[in-house]
Image (tube, rainbow, N blue to C red):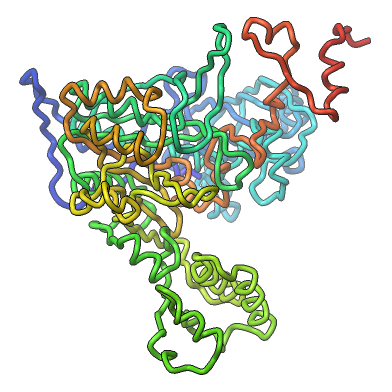
Length: 601
């Protein structure tokens, strides 16, 4: 374990090429940035002298004090002590004079917390453990103290022990002791710290916190509603700091950055959390090229050293190119199997359904070449592909989904297509500015959000054929997942008012503060937000974003550890002038809340 922790602190990679180490401030002061790296002092201010994972043969003869959890015990002769840093073997003394120490170490249940003091000694010849970083030494204990005993656990604290996700979330504080969760959260911390250093120290960004209590924003995702003590008035939790960061540009802050908590009430989705974190960025006087270069440098600078280095610049595709070649706007480019237009081969076909398809406007015949399909795919796989195609017939994204389905089948048969150690970044640009509303195709909605600026070449189309206008919106895709999105913003009040009122038919009064600010000399500006949870999930290879968040919500948005969300009695709702309309099947819960509580007998 020491090896991975050392790599985290010693070796986060820096981009190749020259990095400016002198930044001159507006007050003519100079900030000198050191390139030296050192391991943090993990044992400062605490009772221990060392961590369990750091001891080596070079420490032999030293007197040490260690604190940690009992991982396991063997024949009451040895025990393995664990802390966040690693494991170390402790020799349980057998002498009569140390009976009290032996009693503590032999009787304390596994996962009890102990403090031991003793001498670092070499293991006897032939008893070294090359699989443990501390495998050449052990601790000859002189004194021991039981700091806290552990009751019977709901599961073993071992990574190879299978546990249901519900059980892990219910006892999250125990799950956090696992090696994998420790690694995930510490790597996350280190990457965020390197991002702060890159943005604030190297490029002059200002880290600014924005409010959590805000008001409803038109368009976009559904927001959580928070009652206030004023009758009929509510706050909303922001789905992003979008308006605030634009207002900061109006305020002349020039370069803003925040590790922002965001909230979206999107119901049950396996790849989403109701509360999530993003690296939020906004800049004045910038274009798409500047934003993209900034993010490429940011990721290159903060990338872990134990991964292959990030190569920049990232390739890019237009939205139309991505759909044409991959059938999706977030393609996984680690493997080929591109969609190919073979319409010309069937212009004179007599096959009825192909003739029908080609006779329609923009009708086409397209195919996917499944490399080595005949070698790996079985008859039942072909049947599965046919069924999948039939189930997704008439969807625009059918071929994109079919491409991924074929990749799944091939990999299930042993062919490696998507190397988990490969990180394939891609910019997708030139999105449409508007899309038809699903519930009413005759009306438009923003493809990104209503503050995105139109492409300069399409500005006139905004007033004649708005559905054809491209936007200055860009997404960053990694291995088939969208990890970031941003745009150049509308900084002209009249244009913003036209988009909101005329094209989107939104109530401009909800955004009167923003429109007024744009009228007071707003600079051109743009920005981006990186989804931190999803980025770390991909970097660590975790199966879910819940594995890179300390205390996540379940698939249904519940906290299984504390049972949130929870009910409130009517008297606590009264100051907010709201009352619950109970469904018929919740009458029992309603009545229990109205009953006076009784102490347990």
